[in-house]
Image (cartoon, rainbow, N blue to C red; front, side):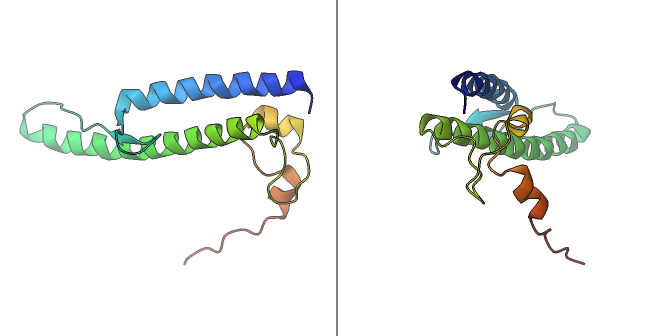
Length: 126
């Protein structure tokens, strides 16, 4: 891949990494024990009877958001590692190049468009 394209993607990944870390720091604290792990902060809304329910509701929501942001952050770390190892932009299923258009839209992509289209859907549990 073109060096300028890789630099553009790298810049985009670092910008997204910064945004994700900022959002995570608003709702969670970084774990001291586990690298790149965050723990949602339990909010302190107040001492009124209804406040407890609101605190629990907000905490549960923060846990979901935290997990989603952590997954996105891990994808970015993975993409940056691949750039460093000169393995970026290679489909993990077929080994061919991932389309640049796809990488511009989703720089952390690990599978090409063709492999996504041919992937079997997950079985639904009825």
